[in-house]
Image (tube, rainbow, N blue to C red; front, side, top):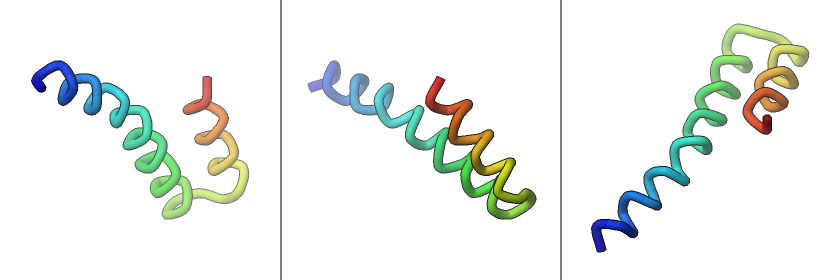
Length: 43
């Protein structure tokens, strides 16, 4: 059970990072910043 929880959180971290980057790009930036954020998170 403990290992499953750890694996879940490790897999969740990149998704949270991506959502955070997209929200910042939408709030402060333009389309170029949004595309850049998505591209960086995919690398």
